[in-house]
Length: 463
Ligand code: TRP
Image (cartoon, rainbow, N blue to C red; front, side, top):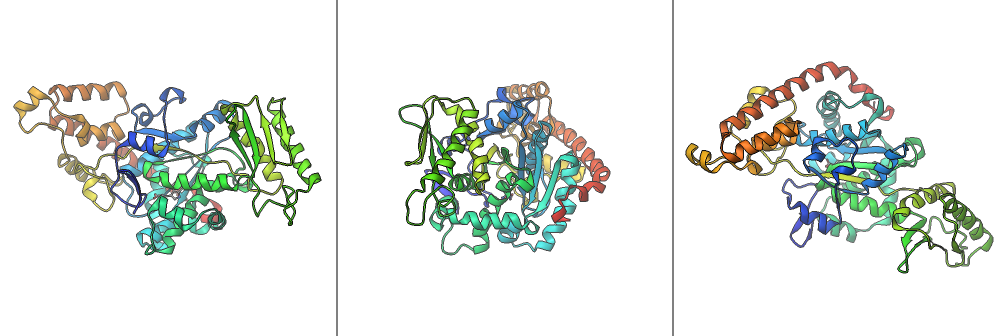
């Protein structure tokens, strides 16, 4: 499964993934992260591991104007939590420290649909394994709410109603679903759209930008969700070919009456005018004076508007949409991290324990895995000294880079020492094992210290 655009494939449910990140950026229209635009960038940003985004500027803009923003992500509670999962939580934590409120979905419905786990097992795994580690990794319980998909009806209801804005052909194109695809599996992306969009509802914090930090395998869900959200929008803000911006009504079944379209298709002038008055004054509030409203055509031209004004205008219009009875959903923002190399040299996967380190792994078992891991060293000592090793494919080095060594200067010393042949494969493994031991034993201690917080992380509907 998975959509194939030329040779690039992204499949959220497969453990085999493309790793040609530049091509992904190009094919799927992602933007590269500019580290200099980030306040206090995390090591995952500094090293280009969190490499791409969609609409992250909405978040950075909210942050710089001290406006609220939220962070939402989700993990399937299947199996044991490993280093790959930790990357997501590291980013959530970074956004939390940057000022975002945090919501995390326990994707139990998805795990049920795609991994065949019972909801009861999911709950147990979520509490004992996932949430216990979220707490230990240092998420602040004050600003974090964790819920189960299965016990938050609104995400299922939103998924269902948003389903009106898509069809099987789109699912086939995005996910490669076909006639054999299980229907619970078809519903999972819709529930995920509900996950991603529901924090904007009034009872979950209200209209504000929401960023979704995920692995790039999840981008299909973001493409879907962004499409669904924008299809619900009553007012589109587009660039005009001739320059400037134009706001256009999007008349749909749900809003035709509110937008002044009678059942006979005729425009109710009074109602249309009152909508336009609201729109015009909301746009003027932002400082645009020269507006050209055309209520009959359902457009307002803003000749002085430029592309970077679109988001501010959009957000103001979403408030009006809400006043008029619409959902008023902002498209979600997202950031994407690259996949960490599996320890055997190919993909990291929880179903193959030898490919990763679990967060609850004992130091002994971790050390065995590192010692057996794929190395970028040369076959003989003499060759290694002469030609140097290749840190790009060296698991021990890459694990220091992705997980264990946050000092950039030290990391780059290790890297050049390896390239020059001064640091040997065994040395590199020892460095990794030492750093990983510290990490695992700290985390284990933190798990003990924060175990009592697990319940406090849960939203009321998920207790
Ligand atoms: N699909 C995600 C996974 O495979 C889990 C998930 C569910 C999620 N809902 C989400 C991720 C919302 C991000 C946002 O692990």
